[in-house]
Amino acid sequence: MGRLENKVALITGSAGGLGLEIATHMAKQGAKVILNDVNEDLVKQAVMELQTEYEADYVIGDVSNKDDVTRMFNQIIERFGEIHILVNNAGGSLHTPRVLGEIEEEHWDKVLNVNLKGTFLTSQAFVKHTKEKSGGKIINMSSIGGRTASLVTGVAYAAAKGGVISFSRRLAKEVGRFGINVNVIAPGLIISGERMHHLFFEENTEEQRQQVYSEIPLQSLGEKEDIANAAVFLASDESRYITGTVLDVNGGRFMG
Ligand SMILES: NC(=O)c1ccc[n+]([C@@H]2O[C@H](COP(=O)([O-])OP(=O)(O)OC[C@H]3O[C@@H](n4cnc5c(N)ncnc54)[C@H](O)[C@@H]3O)[C@@H](O)[C@H]2O)c1
Image 1 (cartoon, protein in one colour):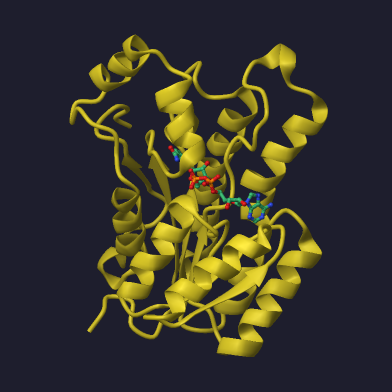
Image 2: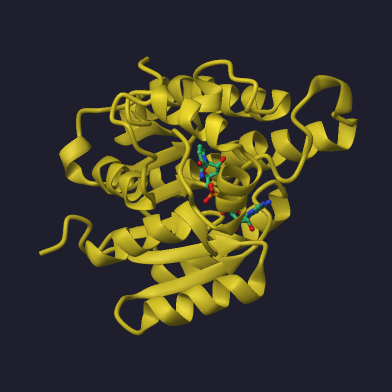
């Protein structure tokens, strides 16, 4: 018996990277997983592969667009009747500049909209559908960049991921009485795909890489599955009495 048997889980931004890893681990634990992304081709491909072994579906849409979010949740309720787990994973720095002087208004809006407004919109829709039922689990993806200041992290990204933490704590207070847990995962640097691989291994010098390793007490970068394991735990009954917390999954690089 899986740890998430019969649970319906929406994982946003899950065409690849950490989102797909989380979806796969949840499916292995018996959850019916619903992938979401703006990249339709990639998400369809990912779902087809998952469907060979697990129950999986998808909803296409932009998490920062209210109409898209409303439609996505209507589709989920139509198809599955209910939803139990929401993972707000869609996000990142979205190819925007890091340094204050280079950030245009449109960069700021894009990063804040996907990472923070998206988390608000999907959480609002999720709570609407779950509060009269048996509760649920919201897991929001922040970052080490939202926990502590680093020049590697962009200004807008730091603001958005810090916002995700404050939003989650405040929401945890509000919805605890409905049996809804709200928690945050704050990953350190994880090579989640080609982009992160290029960023770390091609754009950094060996010296810069050694500097990163020297800051990590556990002395290696994390793997995608380290994040997925944390997400499965926070989605399962094992985390029944945990809400409003931030789980730092970073090898000890930042200790909250
Ligand atoms: N990889 C890391 O080192 C790391 C570290 C800390 C935090 N994180 C966070 O973890 C999450 C996943 O990171 P990743 O490395 O897998 O990134 P990724 O870029 O591989 O995946 C993000 C996915 O979100 C999708 N997406 C973008 N905008 C969207 C929107 N508006 N609506 C729906 N989907 C959208 C993208 O198409 C992509 O598939 C992000 O929130 C990121 O900030 C990652």
